[in-house]
Length: 420
Image 1: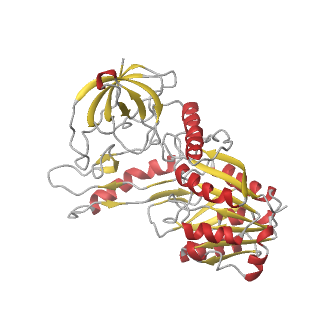
Image 2: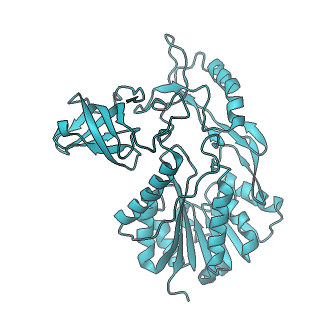
Image 3: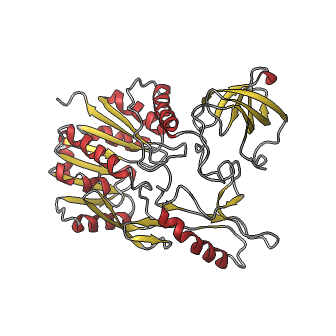
């Protein structure tokens, strides 16, 4: 019998428990948050959700919340009575207490299978019957994160300062993290000094605070305003450390190549990169297209992208500033006239595209759309809007940019069906 990870009591922000019991649960599946889902005979067939469990396991759980109306209960894992063959020993002693990871107890092939199924399930729920390729694995399953943001909660005079990440099930309490196995070696080497700086700066401070630590090709920095340099394939990029940039540099080149090759394979001769950031996709694709335009809302990112275009000697790539609601209005008239020859890369934030953006995209009518998403739910919703408007999906490819967690990146390639 395996003991489950120590779990904190339910957060005070959660509803007060209405039933407390220890029950055996047969785990049948995993939900969208990576929690095991099963049934307990002792709870009259209630659906029970238990984190850190795997399908096929029989576990003992402590029930801390029971919803009689919904016939659902939530429990903390106490012990694994019959483990899955996919179960492995976690790579971090804080797993189950620190809220940063959900899957260190699952072997890597099982993680990839679940992420592929997760994308497929959300597409099916949106009424889309699409082929989903097997999730592309990360070359590193630990030591891959190039940016972390540790923080501390309110400073208390009666207990030591904890610096790290939120505890499982808590919105405020922080677990102390001296080393993060998901972070790169460079970040972990710099973490002790950063923790000492944070502790010194926290003296006299009453409120919590968050901090950034990023490793790039140019080195490690804790200054969010520092300019860092990263190399992705043949493209050299410089950007502010605080700006968004994919945090798995070991799988990123493969995903970028897939996006670029997918866009070029549609036969489009022009490219529009929306939500273009510091210019990664636009610059990586420059050699495959006659004309490339990147559109981005952040003035700082646009400035960095223009400098990156000059740095890489790509005079035919230009960047304009516009918000999501005005992306296509910001394009030059000749770009709009050439929409039938244009592929559009869409890489929105987790919430996906708003209705105004989708309406403009469809009015623009590009030859192809390559949609990069960090949320299977918003991806499925947006594809359900785009596909009926004259597009067909030619590929759906997940990428495991975040091993040991429930998060998955996905690229969907759409081609206009009436553009031949």
